[in-house]
Length: 233
Image (spheres, rainbow, N blue to C red):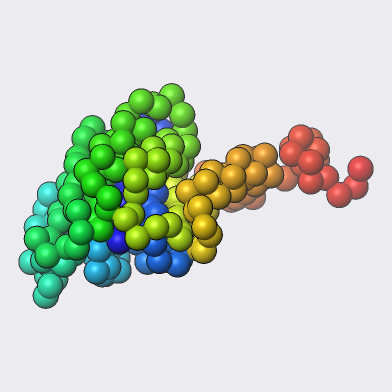
């Protein structure tokens, strides 16, 4: 039903997930990320507690591999699940149950894990990998979307297209990027369009927000003027 990529940027320590599928609102159930902890994508016959509990176990100090083994053990129907885990140290694992539907599979690499099921074929996964690996100079969110674009161009979900999402955390407890396309005829392209709008109109505003290091935020008039939100011109 889905293909996704979970990853870490080893330069910035940002963690994120990008995912697309032929059901509405994939961003509400599949991607789970926590700053300084890890990133998990849960799919196939999706079990959100894989993401919820997986992040909890990572935060307790378990490795990606240990979390994978525990999640499989805990799930009453692991044969129909599929998930990937990336921990804060860049360790990556993937699991695909033998009763997932259609073409299904996964691949793990340096700081990323990709999985898909009910796909046109293996090329979707391989092109998703290529799209991520060949764009290392881009910000993590940009790389994740690029990976989805390449996977979608290679065929994607055999049933069609409907929703997509990208979720990235940096050092704060709120997301750096949280964009969703809940229902669209070409969701990955729409996700790209929204991301480009956000780069101009949303992300500059993030620089003014309160942070752990600066609870007040950066809301002096000069900063407001630079990002075009100054009220008293």
